[in-house]
Length: 393
Ligand code: PLP
Image 1 (spheres, rainbow, N blue to C red):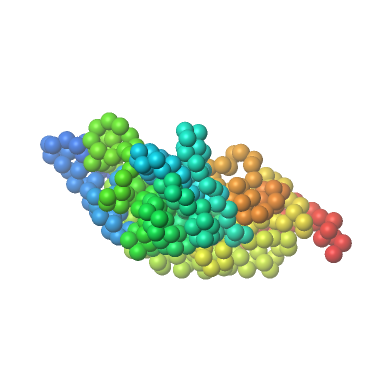
Image 2 (cartoon, protein in one colour; image 1 turned 90 degrees about the vertical axis):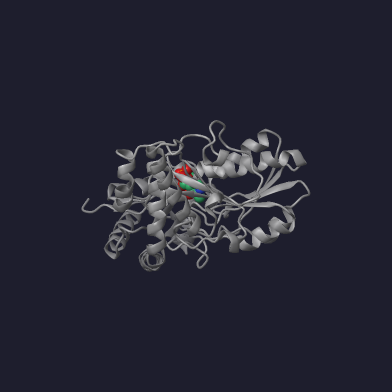
């Protein structure tokens, strides 16, 4: 192995050293509790509020609409359970979501089904996109929430959020979107997009792990998530993690400055990788939308009817050659199940398993892409067996 290449930025990103530097004083001398009235507390509170202001401005919200959480999973849970529980009193107990959501959304919905809610899991098309008309058709008088992710974490497809939010609002239904993979990568404007609830995660955008935020539009009725103290204006109890919140604010500040340029650079790398795979390998299928897609995710499967590849061996062989990628969402890796997203898009199990998701980031270079292509070609040539159908054709 002569090189190490990390192309799993959708699972997590390295911490930006500038973020670490901004956080450091709040782990040591500036250790106050943001709820304390003395100067130590006020110093912490000021840092917390500055961070809140930055996050709010970035998504065109008001600071009072931003609440710190521990990350994407908590924000999704908070939004969905909170909205569902608040709607109970009105007898509205139906939620619309889709089959390609992250498990943080799917399992929250499954839990709500267990306690008496009904959930419609809409299909996605072959690109992993939700059809707004399907949302319209699924609406019932009891629907309290539509939850459709902004962009998919496995294939990168971006959903038509504005249109879906518009349909929800026509029927007086709240609209939640999981923006864990988009805030900090592409522009998100809660007003223009019609978003009532969204979640952010620090570690996906070069910030620290264990910190995130939820946007709750002013006036939206949602039950509190944690019971206890009056932190976060009574909506999310628990002493705020000031150093990490400072880190989230700093990373958002940096993303604001660097996001647009970075996105163009990553798009170029993605194209280079895509072209390289096309030129050098056979039997592949790219997963995800060609144009409505995040610029840093390239997801490729090897089609079982053309080439037979063991997905586990593929992933392991890439790793042995220093290339860190995944076959599905990081949260399910470790389990050998094929990706639920690819199955929802119509891939068969074996093809879905023989998949690699490359997600690029700041550190990746053209040389990395060339190295990855060399490794991939080598690995596929060694472990891939042309299937008889392909052989005969
Ligand atoms: N939602 C999406 C789309 C994700 O990709 C992830 C993480 O992979 C999450 C939610 C969970 O975020 P966190 O790791 O911050 O809990």
